[in-house]
Amino acid sequence: MEQYLYFGNLGLGERQFQIANFIGLALHPSHDREIRHNALEALPFPENSIPKIQSQDVFEHLPFEKLPFILDEIYRVLKPAGVFRLSVPDYRSPLLKKRSIFDDRQRVIGDLMMGASATYDSATAQTKVSFSQDGNAHLWFPKYELILDLIVKSDIRKCATIKFYQCFTNDENFLTEPIPENEMFVLRSLPHDNRSNGKPISIVVDFVK
Image 1 (cartoon, rainbow, N blue to C red):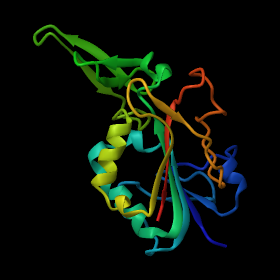
Image 2 (cartoon, rainbow, N blue to C red):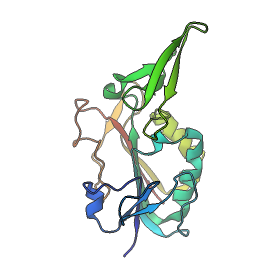
Image 3 (cartoon, rainbow, N blue to C red):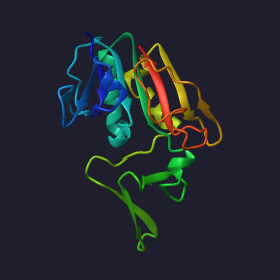
């Protein structure tokens, strides 16, 4: 049976757990369908060996500058014609903006629901943001342009097809195309999650090698 990879803990209640091929890549494995793996390290699999890989709401918890290496590794182990599905929160979503902290240029610098806290520094007249150290904090705040930046900095750009299904492409326009389930269900996507009244709350993109 071919293995599929799922970044992070593979929860017993997740749809992917019902597919026997999936194994979780977990920093702290909790059952026998997970293996111990630090996402910042090389994947323990040979080149061109994995047909399906999914990362769902994981990469925003990792330092942005480390992600090109992770994408290089995904490209390395992905089989020709294999699919990597990436989904991360979209910080142009009205839902996520409501819980975010912005700087004076209206850039998101913290998510109050996901491990950020803010203090005001009267000496510099600026807001300072700190993040919880428990691994649950969002360390960067995905937008379409940032995903494009990661793509061009990594080998994942060599994929035969790169297809965005759902995301805001700018402050006004967005994509809400149906996502082929392909055994890689995305929980926080339309039509499963409509908390933003028909607008995307996640960036969902497929990479086909």
